[in-house]
Length: 580
Image 1 (cartoon, rainbow, N blue to C red):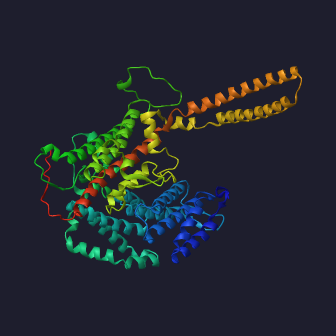
Image 2 (cartoon, rainbow, N blue to C red; image 1 turned 90 degrees about the vertical axis):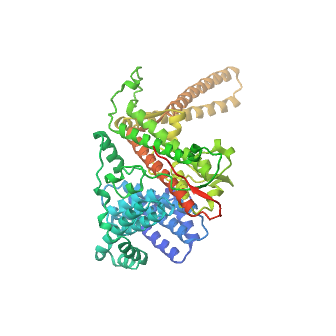
Image 3 (tube, rainbow, N blue to C red; image 1 turned 30 degrees about the horizontal axis):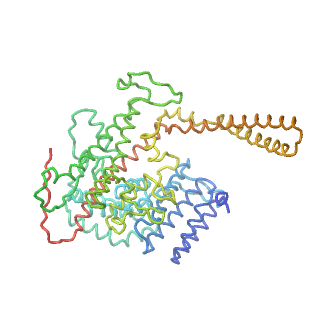
């Protein structure tokens, strides 16, 4: 059966949702999973139907993951839950109004309310992947839509985050924000539906936390993140730091809960860790991991500044750096100025950070032998091949470190990791993949094109019509060849045979000429990867946030590991790290 041709509407989705609830209530997870797989192949009637369908599929997979006790942290069910929640958000973004009435069931649906529920669920499951910093923006979006569940979801998330941080001062601010969110919900408790109200009042964990916080920090109101004022050296520095804070780009966990001037620092570094005395190590060798992490932070900060420096450069402004030759006008509105070059350099630096980070983990945690140094990349660190599928490396498979899990799932955001299922978690299914951009940038040809020019270049109606006509012509000529071949088998006269052969050769020559043109079209049209400057900016910002979060997860992974190390009785000392 061709499922893609089966169209479903909102009335059908409502019935399916009821069926999902029945299966969940009966703990029938095998049937639920089969139904999720089955429904993922159907064709939704419109974006409203697609949003609701993908949402219930994501909920189905997430329920299976959370209820079944035999699944690993990297099981496909959590991957698919995140995938379908993101697909649902993408479809919701296509709907142009806040409320939509369905023709099939007559109901009016609030797109904002539906979006807030999807974002809250997606945040919860990113949190379950260990992606502490990736989840917070989704909670914030749902909170902006007044979703009470998102308030408490973020509060629980911040309480967890405070437990895994190593800076006591930062722990306080995350707990304070969690307390504020809980209090805001309780102040409006009577505004919520009865079902949600009961759930909130019965949450003993949050009630106990609020009581503990008031006792532990009686003067909490005196400490405010947003009262600090930075002293700037220049107007440009002020603009840069404010831009970085607004976009949550500082390597600083406080930037996830504040954009105040106190967070204008990349303060997160390697936590304290102990080492055994080794008299043959030089001072610089003892500091090799700290200096490596510092190098990665430095690379990140430079890439961040390149993006800031380039974003306001007009597309048509030239610069003396590449004004030493006459540039080819390739008639496709491509941009080759300093803006384009800054963007390209920033992307290269950020993408390479993940392999550097992988090498750090490989060495620091002794994941592989030193002889594997040259083979360490982001995918090869975390994945091995088993039964023609890629699964987590044994070092990580049974590992309880949340932040290794987070890095693994960032890998799945960036690159294809499974040969059977293309579970790139794409932020936008219509956007070019990070890996494709990187390969074109390093090994082929990447063109950044003016947004308006890009829209014009995508209008290929004329060329598509010509291509269709040429393909139809080839089909017609091949039919003529079959007729000639049939006649040749029956024709006995030499003169007639010669005439048919000549005609056949002319047709073959014409077919070859047309096919040659089609082949050349394929060859030249695929020579460049073409992206609009606006799309590239969006992808670059996404990559930057992934890189920023990855560096922070690495720091927390080390802290988690150090905190959970058994005491083996060996003499160890903390490292004293000198600063410039």
